[in-house]
Image 1: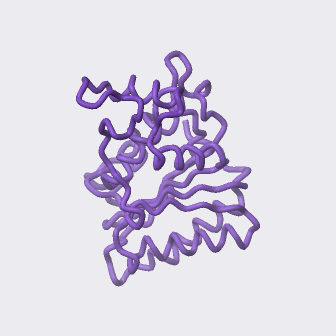
Image 2: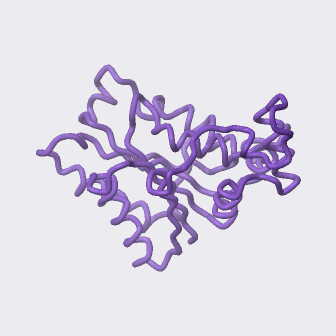
Length: 217
């Protein structure tokens, strides 16, 4: 399987980076092809602006959605966006790995979504969800949170799939991805936690059974 990992964490000494290395190595060990976009290492530009669309008249009114679609059709997107779109077209499985900050992903990853999932590439009016241009690919979240699992089941923070609903449904599913259950490393900030061991076991199980995992509704 061709696997693309979109990764967002600023520290190479982090738990997340150790998990990224484990996932990449295990995928290769199982004879999968892997590409990684490390957003912090590559100093990804998060914000949409007129420089993204090479056919846009400088200084004129910018309509981000419409202009992204016309630039895509004209082959006039900036090179960094084209590069990432090519990776998505290549991939069969996309893993979005990030620490959960303020109930969501880091800004760089949101910026990757904003800039790369352009109109006519990731969505077309009347062709969303299972009819979207990227339909058929699988995707899932691999994330870490600082609190124990019970805080997202019996605690005040809400169910984890509710927290990630805007990402899993509003982005992944809308763009046609078959969304697999998220893998979450809980108690990531605790030095007494065995978060790495538990999460990497879940990653191994996911990779070993990737063809049999049912998408979430």
